[in-house]
Length: 197
Image 1 (tube, rainbow, N blue to C red):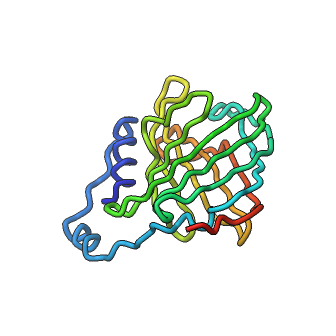
Image 2: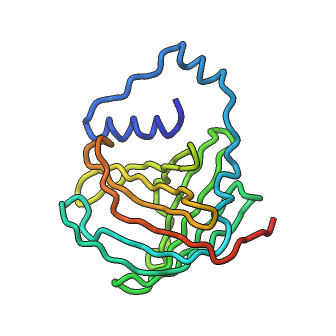
């Protein structure tokens, strides 16, 4: 069972939605026998400077449909030859100027990525990273976070939409992952590539 599966299993158990069945010994042997894909360069398509257009749902999980939009710039820096990277965003949402970083690190042991976020207003990386792995050109990071007095699942996704565009989005689930509400969409258009090694 991968780390992301274990993370989701723990989240569902905490939400009192039951536990996930452990894989059978035969399935476990199959998992170990299959070679793990080297995903250390999965984020290479994001390296560079991007014009960003963001849309955010102001009151998630309430049934409200009040979206706001704004523009900004994101620069993605390569670290450790691509096995880690930092996305640095500067934008101007209606609430005022925002500076945000996303630190993404690849584990050569689990073959998964972790992501941590921080804003200059708080000055601290979030305590629990999202964990995910790329499949078919898309990565979905998952973690559990408190939201309005309850524990919810959070999904943060990144995927390419073309040679010079990509998208990231955030979604919440209050029912253990049965349904998801997307509440933050960022659309990126390439300004320039970062070709440094």
